[in-house]
Image (cartoon, rainbow, N blue to C red; front, top):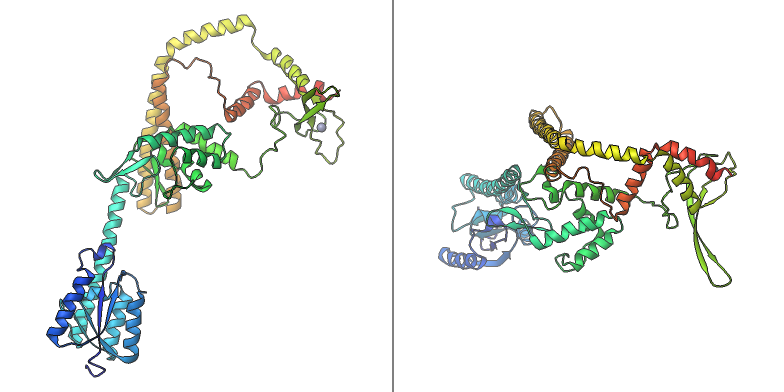
Length: 471
Ligand SMILES: [Zn+2]
């Protein structure tokens, strides 16, 4: 004992900014105390080491350098408390081992008794264990706290754009100005004429930027547009949870945005020269291939310029030479109109149907209430399913992946139903009104295909084919 350079003492002081070191003496205070202690005990300090790093994990450079030197040349350590030297089992074990081999002749703390005997090492081991336990339980408590928050429906992390963390109530609240901007971004995006870059430009202009004031990335914009937080849910630990925070957009708008993200995210979209209304709806009668359209510009010698749109067969079949020629869009419009006339309502029919519809409206309030009730029942059955799902998961009957995917499905349909009920109560009276016209290309596109479908889709297309291209 004390036979290897007993005079060589390393003074080691450490404090980190981490939570576990919050209550610890400052480095200056440690140094002052240790120097006074050294004088009292007649210890000569050969080197002072000051480290400002956590001891939760191995890998402190100055500590490692000191240990290396002790391992090679021998030495002693002076520190305020064992937890200054180690809070993890690797570093703690190394110190004990160097004491065992005698390289570390002695170790001294003003706050803790320890000498290089069996009992001393046992005590030191306990102290290291305790400081590790302190770190472990701290992180466990934090995790438990987070889980508790999630259970209460509070997102346990930084609130997304449009919301604020209220440190007073420990909840998440709506930030009025920015939430309006986020909602506007959703509304603009679903119209279908905005790229993700345009969204981030719009957000930047409205004052939503990165922390350094730069424009947010495309990825971030897409993240915002697909974050279920805005409809009152939140993702945590790979799972979707019901949040207590106030939603700022409707599930319907959110769903539309997801559809648009999917649509615009497709790698290959239609080329620029093909934005024609009938494309994708009609196929060729002769060969069965799709009909496409082209813009043509005709310049006359007198300076007049005419723009035409021609529809033609794509002629993609290799085993068949399609004989069809192209057709001006005006001609196609005429043909379509004459066809639609055949399936449109005669005036007296329309009037009678209108009268019947108005009569029906009188009875509608009743049926709407019934409908809302049915949806409420569906919601309560979904809630029960969610409960059962959780029980199955806790009993380990259902594996984690199934649990998560099933839970997110149930939560999303629950959200939709809740929204339908609230729109019911708002729209009890205007269910008969014709759908409002919107300048929305995505919806227009959708309505167009609905329209053709309602009129018998294929048969309309089929009837069209003959006169059109079979000249
Ligand atoms: Zn053809």
